[in-house]
Image (cartoon, rainbow, N blue to C red; front, side):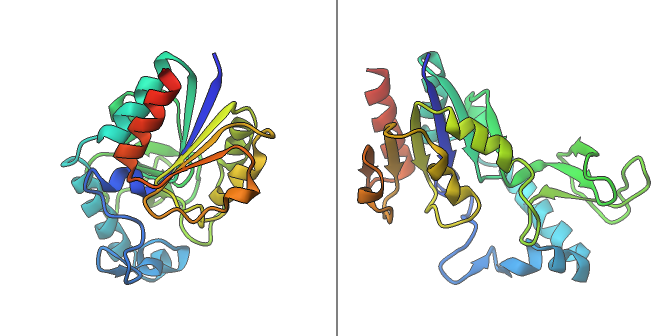
Length: 227
C-alpha cells in the first residue's frame, strides 16, 4: 500500500470545540501565550501554567472527534497512514488513527522536570508537589517556546517516505513543522486544506488547494483517494 502522511494542526480540532493555539487577539484562552507556553513562563509562575493545562485537560474530556478526524482514520483501510500533528489532544487516536506522532507533546501525559525521559500518562489535575520517581516536580508534556522539538527528526523520516501528503488545519507558519513539506519526494500529490489558504501553488508542481474547513475538505479528499 502507498504511504500517506498527514500534517495536521489546530484547525482540525477547532471544529470539535478546542480553541486554536492563538486567537485573533494574540491570547490563548485569556492568557498571553508566553505566560503559559514557554520555559520563562514556567519559571515565573508554575501554578498559573499548571492551572492552564489542567483546564485544557478537563475540556478535552468534553469534546469528541469530528468528521475530519473520522475520515482520516478511514484512510487506513486503503493506505499506510501516519499523522504528524501539532495538536496536543488525543482526538486523532479516539477517531481510530493508529499511527500518530505528536510534534508538540500530549496533553494527557506529563514528564519529569529533572529527567525528560520519565513520561507518564496523566488524566487528572497536575499540581505542585506531584513528583516523578526521582523526586522532581512533574510538568506538562508539552513542547514550549524556547524548547527543541525532539520528534522532528522522526517526522522528517516519515515525511520523506510519503507517496501522498495531506496538510490540514495548519497555516504552515509555525516552525520547524512548516519545513516538513520541503522533505517530500519530488512531484508527489499534495493536498492543502484550509478555509483561507496562504500557500504558493507555484512552489509545488502537484499541489491541490482546497479552500474549505477541515471537516468538509478532508472528507472530500478521502473520498477521492479511496475512490
